Image (cartoon, rainbow over all chains, first blue to last red):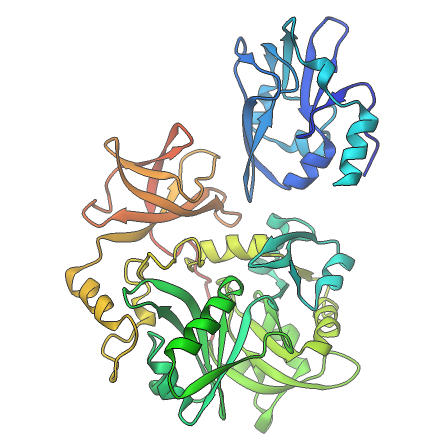
Length: 129
Length: 368
């Protein structure tokens, strides 16, 4: 297992949230989650303008074997979607922390971000499980 | 969770392990799609030790077994393997099995998840014979794919100098197996669950790991394969999977498995009357194959729709590595014409289903 980036925080269900300089929050899934899923075949993401809720489902991701929920690590409004993922999910498998980002969110006041796990707490959860 | 004797081999070969049928089993090693293509184009090795291996013993084990399975065992020749169902009185399927008529004994291979259920069922319902469970001391590994015969043949000696290539499809023979440092005795059958040519080896559990590794060392073309590709291979080949196409509430005639049912069998069998009734009335539903529009696979339980009404349910669905599209099969009410325009409800979004004959894939050259 490679490094877990410390520039972002995590939901226990393996989604990450990374604040950007322009006040947005980028959302994706961890390398651990991508490896657990295996070969990906389909992703459903919200559309620009949709609202997402902290720790609630914002999309679905399907591997060859199974369907998994994607839970949002942040509440707010979707301002950008990584639409390239709908054609190929390879970026999620190959680069889950960078190219495999899923949505960018303008966080609400009560965004939930403070409730997320930091990298070391998330890493501890992975090793404990 | 139970482990097969090959569990440490799976870990050595980098398997991702998951629970299946009560066992910790490899779902893939290198990746499902690569393993799928390896079996279609070259060869792959599977651990099948999780399946149940039973022997029927008694004064007349064939007659006793005939009362509890749908196939006509009395008509099987020595060395033959046959697909059969075990049904309840209502014609529902308790398991689908292979029956092996060896020269001097009678074997069954049953699904991992149904082992205990069948042991109980046979104990209660089979008269004049009993079941010996050899699953722990007898291992089972498969080599599947078009290169299987040429790779394996130099290492298999059958009685009477007969060649492995001459072993017919769905035949079993005793063999001396020279894959490892010492020759071992075992059995080899030309059977499988992939739609490719291939063999299944039955050997003492103590030899399982060395045989598994030796099969992988036969050639760089051979890779270990997990249950993930076993499922996509069998789905393409139109083979049912218990718990998906088959259950205690599902009859085998609707599933298109009449070839495994000897309705006219003398002496009767459990479920015969119910199956005769279904056969004469015609099944109310039929298992059909589909190509699913778009990239999103249809999964078990998804509703099949006709003009907005639910007329059936998906039983299995997956991307098909060989066809390059999403495929699925499911039960549809028989009254719906085969050419009807159907849709599938993919968790709130509808996708078109294009009827596709089963199987989705048939290998080009049949074996003897």
